[in-house]
Length: 226
Length: 300
Image (tube, rainbow over all chains, first blue to last red; front, side, top):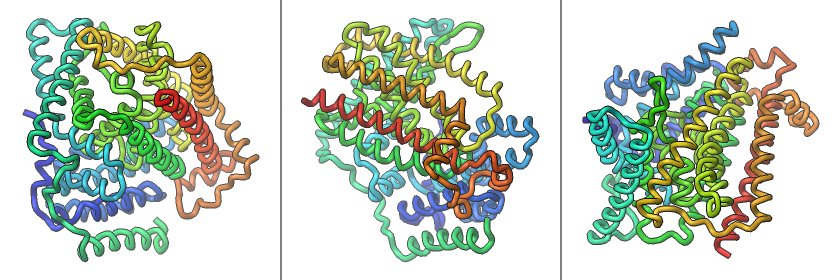
């Protein structure tokens, strides 16, 4: 068994129901705010409120956001060794808060809706479609690779050549799987684009949410200077 | 090396996001041109393949192991433009689903790994793939990792992340090891794939000698520029001063711990970052020109 990244986004909350574009805009605005401030800790309250409103498990959010810590702590350690505590704290706060915002945003938006929003906002269509297929077959191929690894481990692990062969076999089966997928899609009448499952639109709540976040960020920067 | 959010200064991430958006759009258009039917699912599944292939460990000895990173392998099998799109898709999923790399820093990571990483991983194969196949694929694997990791280091440095000489030295050593490892893995997998089905391998048109020389010179200049920029940031400051770039936008967009930076006037981050961005833009222009020549050559 493996993780199901869309388990959270199937839930329900006010944030879950908003159009993907509004959430993407608000996410980028928030990240830009955190990324350009000199006092990142001031944004902890907004991030906390978002996490509560999303009704996602808070411990889970914290654990997923903590995935950035290995990288962050390495550089924070360099700063601390150089005697620069303030910089270390700022870097940790900034990267943890940014990661938390992303985790909440992806937690309240199915990946397909997020991609669709990105496409409607001008992302290259080829990139969006490739990402869709990648995401769809990611865990299928994970399972295949995991089976190959178990098989190899049961025989005493990979030697170099065997590992190379295994990756090449995985390459070959992926290639052939893609051809099969394409034939199956054609047989079901694929016309070059995916139908949208969710029918959200950029209505009043979306405008309110985006404008509210942007207004709050501008106010924080101009009035309180954070 | 995936850079998370919170490390890059505003000019660096903003400039790299803009650069990557343009480059990925260009790569997508070039990839779509002359794309066979059924290529979209293929590209997506090959992206998933790179993810999954990272579960298969290559023993290196002393109880450690490495795994495929994939930029050069994708370039040599799918062609450089399609590979750049696939690599971008991989980075998008890594950033959003696995918190591996930031979202504001996505432009930087795409620039390092999906644009320049893939192109530099493909370049040796394009130039010498028909004659010295295995060495060219090996060199591609090495180059892709070296390019991507040194660019990441350079961007962090330009953003004012402190980097004592010891840290740079240790990272350079680690990068060199993983680069050689990636080269070896890429050539092993590539040879095995080609043995199974030669159709799965990208066939570069015969590159002219002149093009080869220009390409090699451009790659050398880009690499030398990156290394120079990272080892002599003072020189970059001079350049910025001479060009009259000043830190006027400071009040609105502050960098990590601007107070600290602003107090020490001998370390003006804005100039440094602006100069760095200029340098990156220069490298990018070189690559764009190079890419243009390669693709015109191929379609013409």
